[in-house]
Length: 159
Image 1 (cartoon, rainbow, N blue to C red):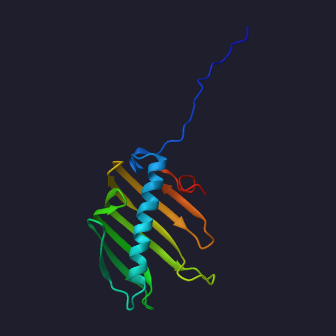
Image 2 (cartoon, one colour):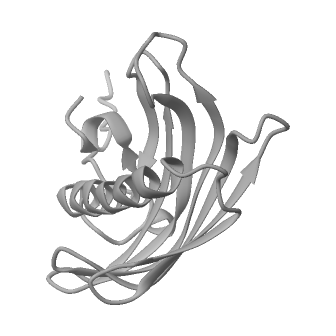
Image 3 (cartoon, one colour):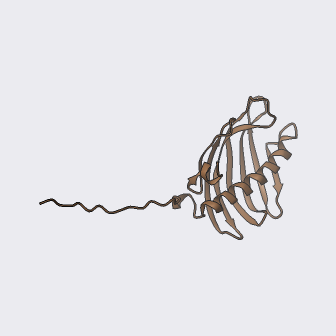
Protein backbone atom coordinates (compact mmCIF):
# COMPACT_ATOMS: atom_id res chain seq x y z
CA UNK A 1 0.00 0.00 0.00
CA UNK A 2 1.30 3.34 -0.99
CA UNK A 3 1.01 6.32 1.33
CA UNK A 4 0.73 9.83 0.12
CA UNK A 5 2.68 12.38 2.02
CA UNK A 6 0.73 15.59 2.36
CA UNK A 7 2.92 18.63 2.63
CA UNK A 8 1.49 22.02 3.51
CA UNK A 9 1.59 24.61 0.78
CA UNK A 10 3.39 27.70 1.90
CA UNK A 11 2.71 30.96 0.11
CA UNK A 12 5.40 33.54 0.58
CA UNK A 13 4.40 37.16 0.17
CA UNK A 14 6.76 40.08 -0.08
CA UNK A 15 6.89 41.54 3.38
CA UNK A 16 9.37 43.54 5.33
CA UNK A 17 11.13 42.68 8.54
CA UNK A 18 9.06 44.46 11.22
CA UNK A 19 12.27 45.45 13.03
CA UNK A 20 13.27 47.49 9.96
CA UNK A 21 10.09 49.48 9.56
CA UNK A 22 6.33 49.40 9.73
CA UNK A 23 5.66 51.21 6.47
CA UNK A 24 4.65 49.63 3.17
CA UNK A 25 7.01 49.38 0.22
CA UNK A 26 5.39 52.37 -1.54
CA UNK A 27 5.49 54.42 1.69
CA UNK A 28 9.17 53.52 2.06
CA UNK A 29 9.78 54.80 -1.47
CA UNK A 30 8.02 58.07 -0.59
CA UNK A 31 10.06 58.49 2.60
CA UNK A 32 13.35 57.73 0.83
CA UNK A 33 12.76 60.04 -2.14
CA UNK A 34 11.39 62.86 0.03
CA UNK A 35 14.24 62.72 2.55
CA UNK A 36 17.00 62.37 -0.04
CA UNK A 37 15.61 65.32 -2.04
CA UNK A 38 15.72 67.52 1.08
CA UNK A 39 19.24 66.31 1.93
CA UNK A 40 20.38 67.08 -1.65
CA UNK A 41 19.19 70.67 -1.14
CA UNK A 42 21.14 70.86 2.11
CA UNK A 43 24.27 69.29 0.57
CA UNK A 44 24.26 71.58 -2.46
CA UNK A 45 24.19 74.62 -0.15
CA UNK A 46 26.92 73.36 2.19
CA UNK A 47 29.23 71.73 -0.35
CA UNK A 48 29.25 74.88 -2.49
CA UNK A 49 30.98 76.82 0.30
CA UNK A 50 34.69 76.62 1.07
CA UNK A 51 36.01 75.91 3.56
CA UNK A 52 33.38 73.33 4.44
CA UNK A 53 31.80 73.99 7.83
CA UNK A 54 32.11 71.10 10.33
CA UNK A 55 28.53 71.79 11.50
CA UNK A 56 25.58 73.36 9.75
CA UNK A 57 21.94 73.83 10.74
CA UNK A 58 19.44 73.69 7.90
CA UNK A 59 15.94 75.06 8.36
CA UNK A 60 13.12 72.99 6.91
CA UNK A 61 9.63 74.41 6.36
CA UNK A 62 9.37 73.65 10.08
CA UNK A 63 12.03 71.98 12.19
CA UNK A 64 15.70 71.53 11.34
CA UNK A 65 18.39 69.21 10.08
CA UNK A 66 21.68 69.42 11.97
CA UNK A 67 24.59 68.35 9.73
CA UNK A 68 27.90 67.27 11.24
CA UNK A 69 30.66 66.64 8.72
CA UNK A 70 33.91 64.66 8.95
CA UNK A 71 36.64 65.53 6.45
CA UNK A 72 39.85 63.96 5.21
CA UNK A 73 43.29 65.64 5.13
CA UNK A 74 42.36 67.34 1.83
CA UNK A 75 39.25 68.80 3.56
CA UNK A 76 36.89 66.68 1.46
CA UNK A 77 33.83 65.19 3.18
CA UNK A 78 34.10 61.56 4.28
CA UNK A 79 31.05 61.27 6.55
CA UNK A 80 27.88 63.33 6.79
CA UNK A 81 25.71 62.89 9.89
CA UNK A 82 22.19 64.36 9.86
CA UNK A 83 19.89 64.77 12.85
CA UNK A 84 16.32 65.48 11.74
CA UNK A 85 14.24 67.30 14.34
CA UNK A 86 10.62 67.82 13.32
CA UNK A 87 11.69 68.60 9.76
CA UNK A 88 8.69 69.13 7.49
CA UNK A 89 9.38 67.79 4.00
CA UNK A 90 6.50 68.20 1.57
CA UNK A 91 3.62 66.89 3.70
CA UNK A 92 5.71 64.61 5.95
CA UNK A 93 7.15 65.48 9.35
CA UNK A 94 10.40 63.62 9.99
CA UNK A 95 12.60 62.88 12.97
CA UNK A 96 15.63 60.65 13.13
CA UNK A 97 19.26 60.19 12.26
CA UNK A 98 20.75 59.61 8.80
CA UNK A 99 24.40 59.14 7.96
CA UNK A 100 26.28 59.11 4.68
CA UNK A 101 29.55 57.22 4.98
CA UNK A 102 32.25 55.76 2.75
CA UNK A 103 31.97 58.84 0.51
CA UNK A 104 34.15 58.63 -2.58
CA UNK A 105 34.16 61.02 -5.53
CA UNK A 106 33.27 59.26 -8.76
CA UNK A 107 36.17 59.41 -11.19
CA UNK A 108 33.96 59.54 -14.28
CA UNK A 109 34.23 63.20 -15.24
CA UNK A 110 30.79 64.09 -13.84
CA UNK A 111 30.77 66.87 -11.28
CA UNK A 112 29.48 66.24 -7.78
CA UNK A 113 28.87 62.49 -8.07
CA UNK A 114 29.78 60.20 -5.18
CA UNK A 115 29.54 56.57 -4.27
CA UNK A 116 28.39 56.18 -0.68
CA UNK A 117 26.60 54.24 2.01
CA UNK A 118 23.41 55.81 3.34
CA UNK A 119 21.81 54.61 6.54
CA UNK A 120 19.63 55.57 9.44
CA UNK A 121 16.28 55.49 11.13
CA UNK A 122 13.51 57.91 10.20
CA UNK A 123 10.22 58.40 12.07
CA UNK A 124 7.48 59.97 9.97
CA UNK A 125 4.07 61.44 10.63
CA UNK A 126 1.52 63.12 8.43
CA UNK A 127 -0.42 61.23 5.76
CA UNK A 128 1.53 58.15 6.89
CA UNK A 129 2.83 57.36 10.33
CA UNK A 130 5.58 54.97 11.31
CA UNK A 131 9.29 54.33 11.13
CA UNK A 132 11.72 53.17 8.49
CA UNK A 133 15.29 51.88 8.76
CA UNK A 134 17.27 52.64 5.62
CA UNK A 135 20.56 51.08 4.54
CA UNK A 136 21.45 51.81 0.92
CA UNK A 137 24.76 51.49 -0.95
CA UNK A 138 25.30 53.31 -4.24
CA UNK A 139 28.15 52.99 -6.70
CA UNK A 140 29.43 55.34 -9.37
CA UNK A 141 27.87 53.18 -12.09
CA UNK A 142 24.43 53.79 -10.55
CA UNK A 143 23.96 50.40 -8.89
CA UNK A 144 21.94 50.48 -5.68
CA UNK A 145 21.72 47.76 -3.07
CA UNK A 146 20.50 47.48 0.49
CA UNK A 147 17.09 47.89 2.11
CA UNK A 148 14.45 50.56 2.64
CA UNK A 149 11.95 49.75 5.42
CA UNK A 150 12.99 46.09 5.14
CA UNK A 151 12.34 45.87 1.39
CA UNK A 152 15.11 45.51 -1.24
CA UNK A 153 16.18 49.03 -2.23
CA UNK A 154 16.27 48.33 -5.98
CA UNK A 155 12.69 47.04 -5.90
CA UNK A 156 11.44 49.94 -3.74
CA UNK A 157 12.99 52.43 -6.16
CA UNK A 158 11.85 50.50 -9.25
CA UNK A 159 15.34 49.82 -10.56
